[in-house]
Length: 324
Image (cartoon, rainbow, N blue to C red):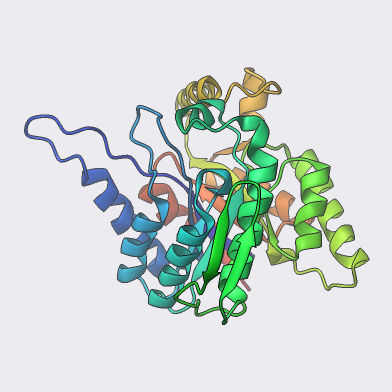
């Protein structure tokens, strides 16, 4: 199996005698150590207007991480295409790919937080159309060596050559977040890798992986289990009291996300919170990773509330059992 990291960093507003960037620097240090522990990748979210300082300039932070690492894959989970100028985004991703020696995993998505769309004055109803147009322009930008023009609903370009070209050919590795059967089939048809969210139950993940595998094979392609990455909140704890606190913290975080997303299918229950986490001692963590492997998952992205301590213990006590 393969293990990476999934998550965010925070930069709270500066106050007297405080360093607003300290947690960004700690996050970078954590990624540097994680590489030495054997982690394959790091995937960063993109969020805006949260009030809690979540990372918004994802590619900037990944560039800093890339400069301090040598093998760690640099992933986005996800860049929300409807918010971006596709040519500028293609240039920025290709630049990071060149600087890192072809280590970019460009995770893309349509977005789901209503308040973020409102903050950019973009109707969320336009998300699908904007996503498809932005993706079309980015692929043209990465693969065209001669001047090209484009006239779409949202973007227009006249006789442009987009530079630089990426290290990976024909373009950086693309991943796409998907949460519905329609979206999962779309990812397979596009030939991209699949990112599955951290809130799905094991039962739903099994269904999604099987659907993606079948769709990939239906178009005559070989299915690579590592083309599907599953995010999971992982917390190694040793007492019932710690578990209760961890679940309560998880529920608070989910409610905060819901306040920004206003997602109609959100379930504010303890059961829903537990479905997306692996919290327990190392024996339990091993059992749960084994259960994921048995339903076809070979690539897990850890979101660790306890930070580097969990990553260290997981690398020492869990990873060796799954890396022959």
